[in-house]
Structure formats: C-alpha cells, structure tokens
Length: 300
Image (tube, rainbow, N blue to C red; front, side):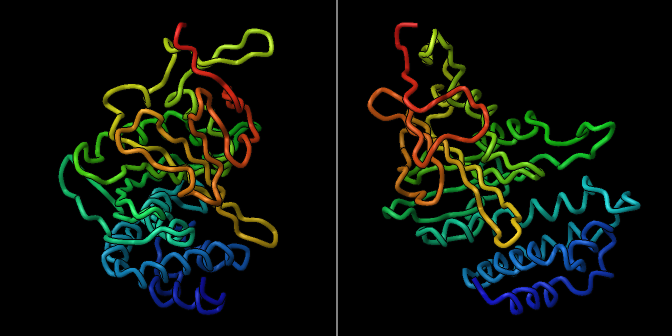
C-alpha cells in the first residue's frame, strides 16, 4: 500500500483529467471527494501492477475500452463503460489481494487468445504453481418502486463462473482457481448461497440435521470440474474509516490438483474435511443452506 496522496496522484497521472472521460459515472468517481477512497484503492492496484510488471498492457486495454462513448446521459449505475472499467481492473485487484496475503506473482495473461485463457499465473504460499481466471460479472442495477431491477442477477455470476471453468487448462501441474469480483452493491462473498448450491450441492434438512445427499451434489462433483480447485469470491467494501476486501473461498473436494485453505489466511473458506463441510473463520452471514458440519450422505 502506498501513501494516499501518492495513490491518488498516480491515478490522475495515468487516467488524465476526469473531463476526458465520456462516461458520466466514471467522471464522477474520478472527481468526487466521496469517491476518493475507491480512487485511492485503484491507485494501489495500479501501483502493484507497475511493481509486478503488467501495468502497461493493462492500462493500454483499459483506456481503449473505457474512454469510448456511452449511451448513458447521467450518472447511471449500469453505465457500460464503467462496467468495463470494473472488469479491466479486476485482475489487478485480485493480484493486489493475493500478493498481499503471501502469494507470489509470476506472469500476466500467460495463456490467452484461444479456448484456454489464464489471467494470472501465481505461486501459492506453499510453492505450488497456480492459474487464475478472473471474472467481474453483473451490474449494480437501479432501484425502481423500492425494488432493484436490471442488476444483481445471480444467473449472470453463475454463467461467468461456468465459462471460467471452461477456459482454464485441463492439463499441466498448476492449481486452477476462478476469481469472481462481481460488480454489485452487495458483495457475493457475503451472500454466496446460490454458488454454494450450484457448486457444492443442494442440501436437505430432517429435524435439526442438515445433509447433502450424493444425488444432489453440485458441479464440483462432476468430472468436467476436476481441473478446478476452487472459486474465490473477492469483493471490496467501502466503510466509514476503512476499505475492506471480504473474501469467501469454496474449495473443490474432488479437484485433481487441490488448493489448501492455508493459502487464504484472511478469507472465509469452505472445505470438505473428515466427511463434513467445514467453514474456516465462520459461516457467511446470510442464508446459504450449508451449515458448518454438514455431512455428505453417500447412501442418498
């Protein structure tokens, strides 16, 4: 992390004046004092990209995509150019978070341009090589008649995760991970129920006992997901005094090249251990249908 003044100045130097941006939402976020905490963190992500050696290609593509025109006429939460900005910054945020928690950076986009695609090549804290495919799906939506519409769509996030699994290499020695940085107001890491159900399975409850029948397991148990070690849900929360990075990790118990919960020292991690699913650092705050200690019922 660099000093606040330095981080803000770095964004200004790279992005130019807010007036140069055609997106009203991006102009607002780059110029408003209320958004300066976000801008500071963007500066930290970009400083990390500079230190790791991938700032130039990241910035070239980011500016080309996001400084184009937009149909938005006001500060629209679903502004397309802002959605693209979030997507282009997501791999830098993931690198910033993981390197800051003990991972080592190796290469930016080592495999790209075909059916197989890798955004980050890293080394896990245990020394294992790792490939990460980063997705930033969805959009915040707008509030109409007290309801959020055209945003925070679980299916968009799930589709992105499924696509990422298709893109990761199926051979080689690297541990494959999917990182999801959903473009939402409320973080997916705090409400991962739909991904828990889709990837781990749909549980049943009998009295006070919750179990996962073998007949209701999720995609982690399919052969076409054996190459994926887990899904990392990484978000950011803008607090009054601090900028937080909540993270929830779902580890695939059937992965041929598994990941370790020890690699994520600041995250909430769900792993299968001793015949039951365990949540390290606590269960998610919202309903998720997989309480700590849920057993896999092989006979059901």
